[in-house]
Length: 526
Image (cartoon, rainbow, N blue to C red; front, side, top):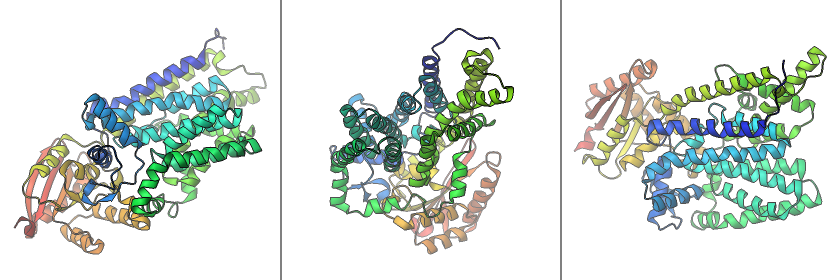
């Protein structure tokens, strides 16, 4: 292998990470032209904030349930202000803002990686892997990413600031730690928990001194004070009930820790290059006793299993860089029994890295199509507009929605239906984490059971068992080529409703590969 001339690899890799990261994060929005997957509830909450002249409302209008307005509001304020300043429709803000903020996470991650790894090159390569890990950016760039993207950005900056505070003791990092930790708390509830867990790990490895304790206390106190206007307002109106309810939806009780740990080391790649590098980096970190990265991974699973997969990829990306630049050369050196120079001093090492980068970029592009297919279709939006405009439905009409998708929390039809129609959906779960508490997962299971119904008897029995009555039923029937199993199930349900004397077909539309039908109960039409 022939040595190459010195190159500023850290700057080059960081530039590639930002450029390619921008392309893969903005591409879905350019294709869909509508907020990706979710965001309906947050759009309503942003409208509620605007209507209340930027004062926190007591409840949200979403789905007509008067749910507590308890969600951390930073993203709603940012979207509202941006819409008012630019005169852009909120729907456009929800399309583009999450991708832009998600892009800002990339340089923020570089700052964190450089402080943890104490090396520019390893930090830049970790940033490249972070930017191009297929699927890592999915949730932040969706419509609901108007809160999640800010949460992740401020979490990364908070961990970085706290780390620098404990490393240097400089007072400027105390102020930045308080600000970024507060913004993380004000952006997203799961991110707040994950930020606290990560900061505890940082303290455990870098702050277990009197000076560290002296700094940790004012950070905690400052965060409480800066976030008090939000949580104090919520508590004064609703008590602790919304927060206690939300804490019971993190899936701690039902999680299998063995399967969870296994899920942390899974990949959506066709060829699992990153997984191999992560495992190599993990082995290297254990060998070199760099336990902080390993602790960050497993603490994320401990504090909130539901978001652990996404948060753990921060440390996983750093392990991938160690795997490529340290673990593999160390293995080659042991096998060949000769000293190996740094990987990027070899032409073969450079070629390998650029092939891997191109492969990851293509993988991200391919997996983006899966994300694009989670967005409301034009047929969905047309049907919802028809419901919104139709005089059949009095205010408070109860709908149930059957799309065949078992997990209702990632079904865009379920979430956007209340927002775009102004009607109430019994099968929409969003927002109920603030009221159902320990019954949240039971409701989730009930809604999964509804999606499996193949005849009207099943739907009616479900309604009686759950106490969720309905007047109108919406059914999405995909073509057999799109999803044969779902097509057969929803097709049988449609035939059953047509054969029943208790229901009347009021809407039918065939659009591309899906058919949307809406039935009303006979008494609802009187």
